Structure formats: structure tokens, C-alpha cells
Image (cartoon, rainbow, N blue to C red; front, top):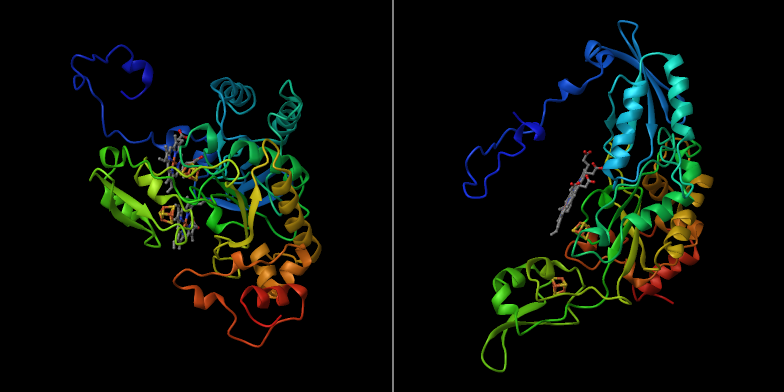
Length: 395
Ligand code: HEM
Ligand code: HEM
Ligand code: SF4
Ligand code: SF4
């Protein structure tokens, strides 16, 4: 009894707890496995990538399953989900799955069915011209961009998610449908530094960033906020209790301490900080989550701020392209972007990408010391001198 149809008409607002179903959890995934997956569960021998977006898995029993991976916008209408179902019904006996990066995977059990499926997918476009189901996202390329809500739904963003992702993905489309890079490049996006998703652990990340402290609404703050929560939300102790002229409770914020994280606004709606000119995009690079060869890494800030130039974010697109091109030209096979940057040295990374090094990139938060250079080993580049200048060292 968990399908919505079975529950239709059972809700009575007069008796909200009557007929109430709860704690049933998700459906068991076994119910939705294609037969070939069920029959060979735990028996897979090897796999191959036949071409970008197309894989074959071969079982110990000799069975094969062909998978076609397609890009998706993540935010989608029920109409589009119905179209996905129609394709699954037509080619895959009604089965389909979504990946951890929100791509769609259609599976078939023979190469004849595979060709028909691929042709059908490639033929489908939106009226405006974009592919509905571009095939790709496998191997050493750029797959889907993990992203967040932006102005579509959240109240704390400093930029938009869907529009930026569309702009960057348009530019990187050939990397989605090809496998021409030294290793996979994971691009991700978050619209504020709550970092919902994977920006802190991706090869390239776009992150929404504020540059002005919150504005305090003294009139309502004591009515709508738990003031101690707002005070303890601040990572740098910039907020302290205060009194209004007529003796009411409020807070004050030391502007020169605040680094615009927006945490206090998450706790207290009387402290908004979004700002048209102040808000923009920070670019990070060099993170990874796998343990292949090197251990997982956090991504590091390489561009402090780019403008929110809606709707196509040309500066963001240009910067992402610069980083990927330098990496593609210079890295060794299997080297992830962070592996490459660490091998050549970050001063060389800045030289090769042409990105500017400024004082904003120097860590100054608590454990910052370990991120500075406690060695005489460095390469003479303009970027290395820029680090020295930014740190207040020799000119
Ligand atoms: C008040 C702030 C927030 C609101 C209103 C909010 C709301 C939402 C909504 C409506 C979704 C979409 C759910 C769906 O797909 O049906 C979502 C997804 C998600 N949220 Fe939040 N959320 C908030 C804060 C956060 C925070 C702070 C985190 C992380 C610490 C977070 C992590 C996520 C993740 C990982 C997803 C899934 C994205 C995906 O799978 O595509 N959210 N959130
Ligand atoms: C010191 C703190 C943190 C560490 C050490 C850390 C480390 C990691 C690592 C190693 C992974 C990869 C896990 C895997 O291989 O499956 C990961 C993924 C993830 N992290 Fe964090 N993380 C930290 C903080 C955060 C924060 C603050 C957030 C959100 C507010 C967050 C959200 C996520 C999400 C949503 C993923 C999944 C990404 C994906 O599936 O692609 N993490 N984190
Ligand atoms: S990253 Fe920030 S702004 Fe974006 S959805 Fe998450 S909480 Fe909201
Ligand atoms: S925005 Fe962040 S740093 Fe600034 S006062 Fe609020 S919590 Fe503190």
C-alpha cells in the first residue's frame, strides 16, 4: 500500500491521522532491475566502453548488458520523465536508471537493440534545438555537472545553478560526447558555500560567493530569530548581542571581521546579505573523491570572484575552459587535474592556466599555516613572485 493511486481520496483534513501511512521507506531496488541484471547480479566478469556513452558488461554466464548513458538537465518536467518512460518501454522492456551525477542510463541485452536505441535517442531534440538525450559521459571526458537549486528554489544562493550549468555544459559539450582528456574531469556547482553536493571534492567547481556583510533588520530580529543561534552560527565571531535605541534585543556585526559566509542568515531571516553587485562566482580546482593512485583531495580556490553575468556567465565559462585546456595539453595519462597541479607545483598551474594569483587565495582561517610554503623548493615563475608579493614578502 504505497502507490499514490491506492492512497487517493483517503486524506481527511478533519482527521489527519486516520489512514496515515508512515515509515515505509523507499521501494526495494530489486523490484526495478531488468531481468538480465537480476539474473547476473554479483556475477559480472568485465566491462568495456564501446564508444563514448556506450558500455557493455559481460557476465560469468556469458550474458551481456549494453548501457547507453545520456545527459540530462536534472531539473525536468513530468512530460520529459514520461518521454524517458516511453523510450524505456519501446527499447528496454520498461526499465531505466539514473546515475549519481543525474545522467540517464538505458539498458538493452543485445547489440541489435542497442543500435535502434542509439538512433532513437540521437534523433530527439527540444524545439529550440538542444539535444534531449545526448549520448556520452563515460571515460576520460567531462560528464554531467552536479549542481544545486539556485534561484529556482533556495533562499540563500549567491548565484544561479541551472543557467550556469547550461552555459558551461554547452561549452564543454565535445568533452561530454568524447573521451579525449588525460583522465575524467568532474565539474560541479553550488550556489552558496553550504556546498550542497560536490564542489569541495571536484576537479573544477563553481561556487556562489557574497562580498558584503549582512544587513541587520533591527525591527524584527528579536521576533523572528533565536539570537544566540545567529551569534554561534558565525565561524569568525563577528556577531555580538546589542540593544536597540528603545531597549529591544538585537545584534551588531563587525564588518571588518565578516567574510560573508551567510551562515547567520541561514539561522536568522533578519540578516539577509544577497546583493546584485556584491554576489558572484568563485572557481575551485583540483579535488577528487576516488582513492586511485593518490588519496582523495579537497578542491582549492584558484579564482576568488567572477561576476554574475546572467544568463550565460561568459567569464565563468572562459575560466573553466582555460583550466581544462591547460590540463588537457599538459597532464599525463591517468592524471586527475589535482594530481597534475600538485606534480607541476601550483605556481606552474597559475602560469600554465594564465590565472592571476591574488592575496584572496592565501588561506587565513585557523589551520592556514599548513597551506603556506615551508620550503625553499619552488619554481621561478611570475606566479611564484605573485605569491610572494601577496604574502607581503619580497617585491
Ligand atoms: C534552507 C535551505 C534548503 C532548502 C530550502 C533545500 C531544499 C531542497 C530541495 C527542494 C531539494 C530538491 C529535492 C528534490 O529533488 O525533490 C533539495 C535537494 C538537495 N539538497 Fe537541499 N535544501 C536546503 C539546504 C540544503 C543544505 C544546507 C544541504 C547540504 C548540507 C542540502 C543538500 C541537498 C542535496 C545534496 C540535494 C540533492 C540534490 C540532487 O540530488 O540533485 N540542502 N534541497
Ligand atoms: C571536513 C569536512 C568534509 C570532508 C572530509 C568531506 C569529504 C568528502 C569525501 C571524501 C567525499 C567523497 C565520498 C565518496 O567517495 O563517496 C565527499 C562527498 C560529498 N560531500 Fe563532503 N566532506 C566534508 C564536508 C562536506 C560538507 C560541509 C558538505 C555539504 C555541506 C559535504 C557534502 C558532500 C556531498 C553531498 C558529497 C557527495 C558528492 C558526490 O556524490 O558526488 N561534505 N565528501
Ligand atoms: S548550495 Fe546553498 S544556495 Fe544552493 S541549494 Fe544549497 S543551500 Fe541553497
Ligand atoms: S555572514 Fe558569516 S562571517 Fe558574516 S557575520 Fe554572518 S556568519 Fe559571520
